[in-house]
Length: 371
Image (cartoon, rainbow, N blue to C red; front, side, top):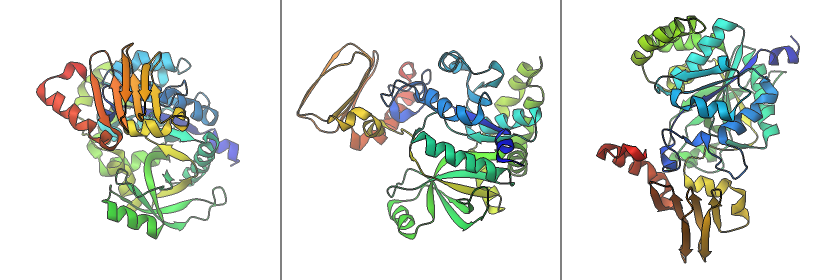
């Protein structure tokens, strides 16, 4: 089979879920982080994700999101075919979202190779990403579930890791490795040992796989989830869809695709990895916005927000403004200020990861109107 023929089987899937609680109050249930421009590029995260996948899959792109985000997604991706927008009634974690996409695509054509790429990641350069995905598609065509591993730049405790085994020695993708196993988020000492040892990559949650192979592993490890998703997919394009989704979806088990498919498939020898020769960030907190925004290279203070009114005197950090209120910062370092009409966040880059705990407290106290 010619290389071009393999790529014609490729269908990109963009799971667009997750509130991004560490980016509250900018990111909320009604407007999660993938709907925002967090890099000052003029493009939202989901729009940028779609754009870098479009040359690889053409119009063969599916988005899986929540019902509440239907209008916003269609506004940002007007070229997305209505049949390729899959809406979840409620979040059920990544195995249900990605598994449903795989099941629907399998009913359309069981020879499809799908690639799942989250809507809220920042990747540069795009050409290196696209090259890695092309290699991954060719490896998937050989009968593998393929993950794209990110070369660690520091001993992060915030990401899971992929441990590689031997090279696969495939002519179509010389950089491909077999995957030995997946490793949970480590402590700092363990993460440092991974970098020193080598052979470990960050798990960015990117998967490319034949839909039949992905569903085979899902059935073996999560039979209840698999059965429910296949029942829904079987009637997806029919009048029975609404009733079936309403009846089946609430009872589906919640689990991550890593646990349901990737880890057991790796143990079975069915997972390969392509190293990603590109920079990658999942924009996990406001400190990441400071790193990623181009303005940070020119100033100690990164400011996001159309018409933001910020005065700074010997101050550094990140300001995100969704109001016309004047924000004055004087003699303060590494500050994070997020100003919205109904909520104000003030913290530091050092404590940016702890924003999630504030969201949990607000939810527990009943202040859900700002979430």
